[in-house]
Image (tube, rainbow, N blue to C red; front, side, top):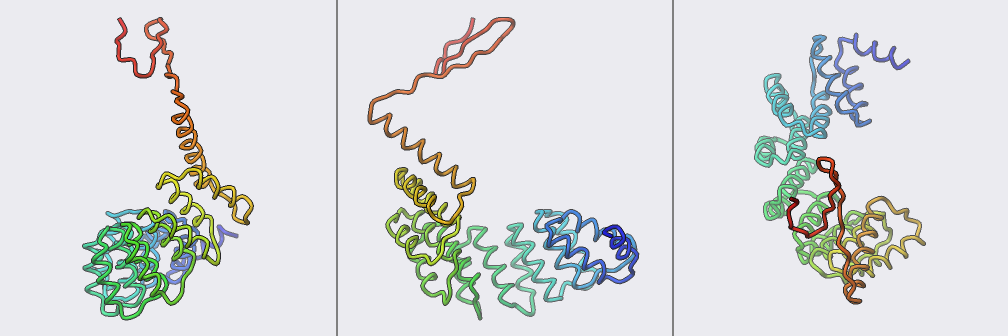
Length: 294
């Protein structure tokens, strides 16, 4: 049945059939296949339209194929679709994923219609590029904002440990989701304000595994391994299932705790050694031994 469906759209002279196949492949995160389908579409003489390019640009951005993205942008200009609002927004998203802030700015400036999706893409590009001040200017200029707009700015301020600015945006946000709260906890943790981070954690209406991991990292970064272990014990009796990152953080906390106990007790770790056979001889090398073998 699948083979029959593939044969049907591959013999179709209409781009809509191809677009459905490409979109389905991108939704399934089969980005390489989506690009191959587009190439086959071109080879059969079917022209792409304004619905083809946005999906294809998303696939290219997901794979970080910069050269392919630049080439497709040139192709879009030649085929006359560079002024299409949906294509422009997709181009902006692709360049944002590439962290090509200059190219993203050019596309943004050329856009005749800038909706909240376009503004958010530009905002995300600035934050991911570390241009938090530029992102703040864009944020203030936005004619309308949605939840993503606020979350991007909170995350941006969190990345540089600017708790006050992050808190201002957090308080201004008309609605909040788990991402908003997680970003604020991260901001407080990065700034060393562990008490405020835990306060936010306890105030959250719901917590995801990312929330617990963020709080664990906050404790570890502020050298509080015992609190991290205690938090993990609390997590075990909650309805949130730990992931591999959780276990990594807990192992790190336990190791840190054991190192502290050894130092307090004056216990020194014995030197490790490696046994290697060299030219028929068995040689032992101790850690920290700088002597050379004869």
